[in-house]
Image (cartoon, rainbow, N blue to C red):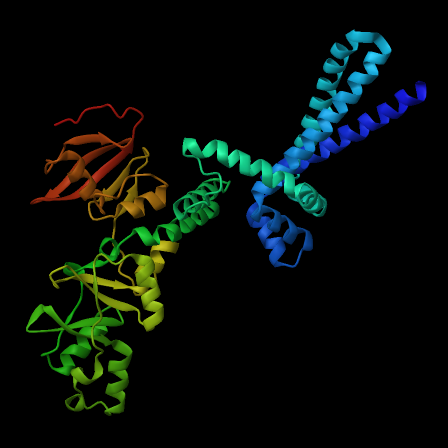
Length: 429
């Protein structure tokens, strides 16, 4: 009898180890970083490729693990009950229940799962080959169990086999970006860039274009000497050309091509014709999203487009650099014109010009001001106030206090923004 008990104890220990293996494998395979495993698989890691293949059949993987785990736990409990009944009689059931609960909880659940959750990638790579065999062995039973589970859940409108949609995948990416730890300036800029890439499809060119009132344009009817002087005075290399009215854009002149033609003509401006040098303008609707426009720039190998509204009237211009700046932030060079827009005050408040875009503020300060109804900070104030505010008025919304400091006619030109804790404050006159 003593040898039988010893064998039973060894079997129980083996079953508890198997239970710990299944528990740790489940935690590791569900908690491992998908990007890291994917990167390892791309680099040729056979174990990582197996893990990725297991993930592709996650339903069967989890089913196989749970089936194996329950089999060994129930078997260990049954053997322990039989042993204690032989030793102490009917009371052995109680002893076996208490002892096996403690053993399973500590050695088959807490310990392996704690280790696996702190070493998810390492453990998942180690157990992947074994779990592939387990899936093959328990495959038929797991298929039957999953079929039964689907049948039970279907009347309740639950489809456990539905894949993640594109919006859910994007939300997962955004969550991973927000979890990108660190408060340094470098890490903050990385988060901003990654968020901006995901936002490209949601932002229209009309929100980032250079407005027509800020555009430098050339009159095609001017003499070439005057045009050359205007190009030299301009900080830009591509300049729209109009004829008769500024709304009638007939071409885009590249400064380098103008000067190349000037050199080839031996400096004789009378031999130059602007119409032969400039390129045909490329018109795009203001509703084009940045992702599509970026792809169009690459496909057409162009850097400059004229933005028009639904009636065909010119609204402004957008360049490849404008879209890149939406991703990486402002790209300044020695010819850029510095425009004051945002000033941080000593008390923590922000002094902002009305034309500054909400996206720029959100990106610079990691705010979450909404930009669905307005693209500029002045537009947001007008939308929330539902009227044109007077200088000195203060509004509180979205967790900030907006104090109107400047206004020209019907345009808000300067705003002081201060973070507040109480959003229930009312506007003041």
